[in-house]
Image 1 (cartoon, rainbow, N blue to C red):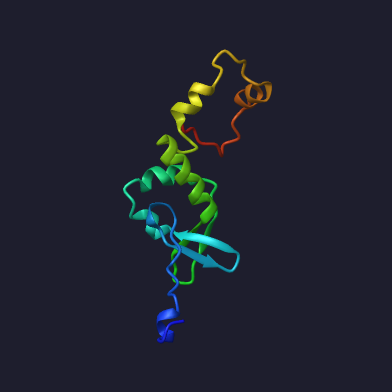
Image 2 (tube, rainbow, N blue to C red; image 1 turned 180 degrees about the horizontal axis):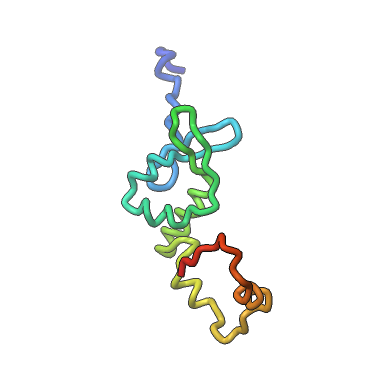
Length: 120
């Protein structure tokens, strides 16, 4: 036993995750700060992959990204250099000889009602 009781108390280090981001404990789980991800050199790449991820508003006005979503992205990024929505990979998986589904053909043949916008 130590003569100095202060020496025996361990300081709790902040929890970190992939790429050195600090983990923030919330009442319903753990998140990483959106502002911390913005500082990473591959932020735009992550942003393209983050569609569908839940953001939580933190007390200081920042947003929190679900820790499990961040871990899933990070592991895939480290292992493959890609994220879950790589267009080139998805196109390679498509069967270009497959027929267009009937409901899509019907939809394409519908008349405009005036509120639609053409994007392509």
